[in-house]
Length: 426
Image (cartoon, rainbow, N blue to C red; front, side, top):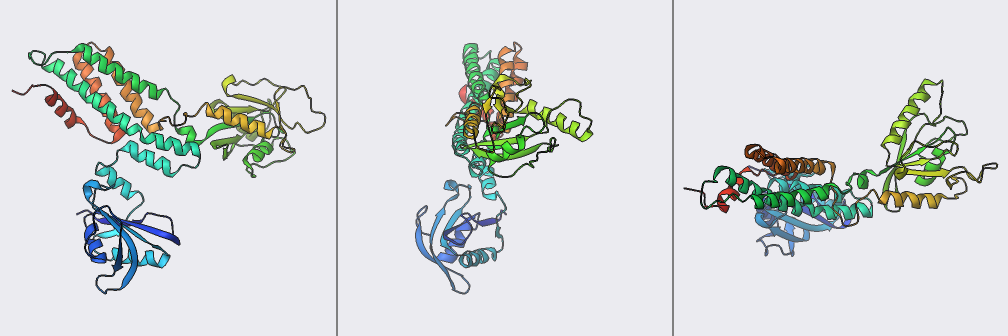
């Protein structure tokens, strides 16, 4: 028998209100034992909560209950809106935990039960996870937009089932008078699927929203990379020194600038012919990070960077120091006086936004992109395959990719679509 679980679903006490949720087969019975006859479903009602075996008053609280078919977990569900003191919450939880078969929920278990009972698919679970961990406005909006992906994927899944039914009918039942082999319709549905999924795959992914746009600061030793990163981050994240070559390894600083997440990367100074083995390793690592970066802030006015123009930001650092050339290329920046810092931050945000999804636009996670890419490739192969048996296998691979994306098995549903669309049965 499934355990009944409970957990504090609001912020940690003390607080004005503490919401305890209970989900599982004993949820409604527990509420009846504590508060008497159940009130109207899905309606908050003021009740006195008691310890049933002693009659002790626990709290006067607002309570609500939900039938399994209308609850977020797909199970009988109860909410207790308690006064938010620690002692009150502890007392109520202790009473719940004293019942055999009732236990405290594990991390994420309510969401897992919602998924297991078909109330959420994996795409919706991921959207909820992203919303919970959102730290910037762009992350919050992207997580909310991601919630709409589930509906789009469900639409594609239904089209895939329809396409599979049409293809199977054309393959196995083409001799039946009432099952025409409608190749034009098959091609049209396939083309629509390929175009829709392809457009979504072409958009920027969600990784940079949450991981941060990767910005590498590169230049010769003693160019002021560490000092500049500290100034942009607003905290000491890298060791600074007048001694050239202080930074030997890669140092990363996650920051938020203008509502956009970044990872600012300090690297070893770039120079040729170093006799220091550790420094050479640091330089090699710096070069790899430059190659992998989304943006590179180049801090060497004497050398031309081997960096693509679309990710290059060239600056003239330490602009406050006497004797520095006014004619040097790049934006003048001084971490000491603050000259150019705001302009550099604005440029980073402006350039990073071109790498991010537009506001309100669905952005795929790595896992979602991987499964949709497999589905798209299988559909392209299906559309180009003249052999009907091989083409049918490509459709099976496409359905499998969608099922892996949502966590839903769809073989039985495909058969239902097949036999429901055409009068095949004899």
